[in-house]
Every structure is written in structure tokens, then in C-alpha cells.
Image (cartoon, rainbow, N blue to C red; front, top):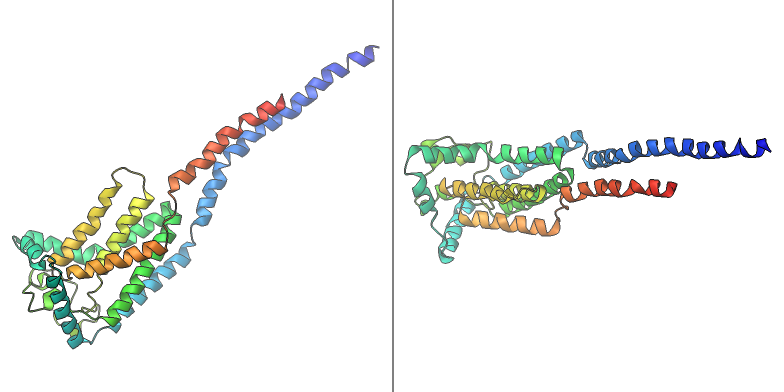
Length: 294
């Protein structure tokens, strides 16, 4: 009779407690590691770096090659320039000279505008892509696709509609600020310019890329001040018009291409909203094993 009661009662409570103890202690690390898989999933969603470097470099080379294909159409480019100038006057768009006159009030404003035109375009876009790749991989893929689509469409328009910039158009009466005040990225003679095609004015990829950068940063960030990123395309617009490198219509067409690309290539959901979900689920699931142990 002593063997029926004494050994059975102490052993039964001790065994479940020993089994449940290790399991309860092992579950929180597993659940805390749930943040790990979410982080690894985010890194898995990031495209391979080498592939992206090759892809972006290839797109850049195609961009440079496509722009040079439209060179040599001098007569057609000036004819199209007269047409664009006439279209702008018919649409009652502001005179580009009004913006340039503000820059020409002093050497410093026009010099800064020339520096902006020559140095901000590519580095700002590259920095934008690098930041998205490191911090917002899903937005990076989206932005890369939008930029590629806008650039491809722009190159087709450059081939179909060669256009001399307003600084070359005598009717416009504008100053070539790059040649007069410096610095400039263009040769004084378009025919001898081997680095860039000066007859690829429409659409303006300076403005198109700047607009994509601003919209991408607004979509990928959560700050209430993120709308200020629109200052980037606004300043770019004033620079390209004030330096007489582009017409107003060049930017309008570029904005239209960006709008079409954004309508086709949808922006991903905000990262912050998706990143909070696994944390919330972990907090809810922790009490469940404790309740089940009762």
C-alpha cells in the first residue's frame, strides 16, 4: 500500500513540470528568432549585388549609346526646335528667358546653376538607387524598373524627334550659360562632341530622373517632411530651363513618361507597415503556450 501512493504522486507532477519547463524556455528564442527570418527574408528579397551592378552598368551604356545614335541630324534638330518654340508660344507657356534673366543677375547664381546641371544628375540618381538597394530592396526593384522604362521611352523619342536646345536657337535669344560662365559638359561645336548628343533635348531626362527620385523617396520613407523631396525636381526644372539646355515642353513630356511608367509599374507597399506585422504576431503568440499548459 505504501508503494501505490508515495511513488506515484511525486513522480507525475515532476515529469510534466520538467517537460514543460524546457519547452517553455526554448520557445521564446524560437519566437525571438522570428525577427531573424523576417530580416533574412528582406535580405533574400534584395537582388544579387553583382547582377545589379552589371545590369545598371549595361543600362547606362545603352543610354549613352542611344543618345549618340541621334547625332548628325542637325538640320532636322533645328527645324524641330523652331516647331517647339512655336508650340510653346501657342500654348502661352512662360518664356524661358524669364528664368534665365534671374540667373544672370550675378555670376554666382548662373555658375551654381551650371554646376548643378553638370554634377547633380548622375550622382543623385546613383545615390538614390544605392540607398534603396541597402534599405528598401522592394522599392529599389520598383525604382530601377521605372527608371529603365522612362529612359528607354526617352531614347526612342530622341531617335524620332531630334531637338536642338534653346541655347542654340537664335529665335529664343538665350545665352549659352555653360559656354559663357562655365562649367559645361558640352563642346562648343555639337558635331565634335563625342561624349554627349546635344540634339537629344526632348524629353529631359534630367527632370525625368529627378522626378522619379523624389517620388521614390516619398514612397519609401515615412517622415512627414518627405514631400520636401519634390524640391529636387523643382530645382532641376529651374536649372535646365535657366541654363537654356531645355524647353518647358521637354520637362512636360518627361513628366508624362514618368506618369505612364508609374501607372504600369505599381509602387510596393510601405516597408514599415510590413515590418511591424511579424513583431505584432510574436507578441500575441507568446501567451498561447502558457494557457495551453494549464
